[in-house]
Amino acid sequence: MPSTQRVLDVLITTILAVAAPTAVGAAPCAFAEQGDGRATEVVDGRSFRLADGREIRLVGIEPASVDGGTTPADALAELVRGRDVVLRGTDDAPDRYGRQSAFVFVADSDVLVQHELLARGEALLAADVTDKDCAATLAAAESEARSARRGIWSSATVIKSAESPADILTGIGRFTVVEGKVLSVRQAGTTTYLNFARNWTRGFAVTISRRVLPAFEAAGLAMKSLEQRRIRVRGWVEARPGSNSGPRIDVAKVAQIEILSSN
Image (cartoon, rainbow, N blue to C red; front, side, top):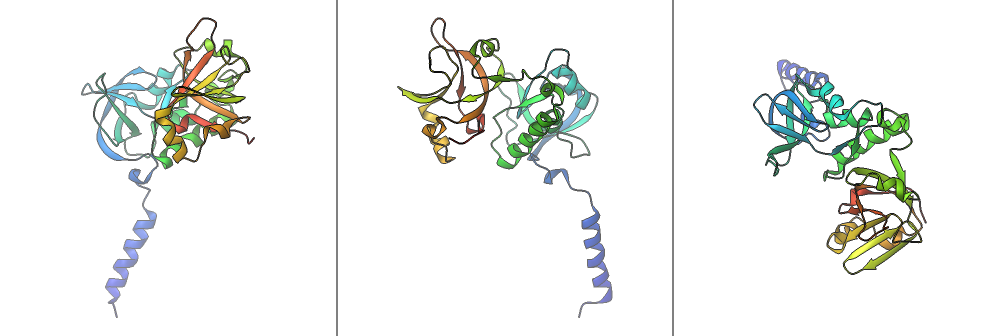
């Protein structure tokens, strides 16, 4: 039989393990640590500089604001400026602008900056998070803010209607969320079109390249199955080629499309 001291040691170890706070590494989006530092300067709504000069870009979000609301840069500054932060991710290689993309945690806490911005309604969820648990956590934060009408979600104009292409066109070059009913799915060359208007040349459309279709099929999402369904799509608004043509969003990732209704 084990000694009394051995039993006590095991009991104490168990109690300490239960009582200990959850480690940051166990939190959603807490990938491998890729450095740390003190945030000294906010560049824009999703980028800031550390004291050592590195520029950090937040992955998983797109800055957003409404007239009269907090600017994206101010919202980020409130969370990170003057604070020590920990950088986490799967790749610390800088992008072509020299920025390091990362999930950012406030040091000595499990506060994920991206999650906080989404939960406060100070940002939109992007579609560049490949880890399912992390993506689901961020999506839930945005959904909660939308339901509570916090931040940008206090405005009814954040989500654009696919039935108002002129309104969508005002956001050319900007990351935008659009909702509407897919009236038809067409194939033209190497591109699949999800059309939201009967006059497909002037109405809003989603374009999907043939090269990314396997990813949608692997996720169980056939393009034809989207006909007569309401969906929410997010991405960068572009003008379709030709005069008097409607707006479009090019979709390259499954996460850019959210199905809102059945056929």
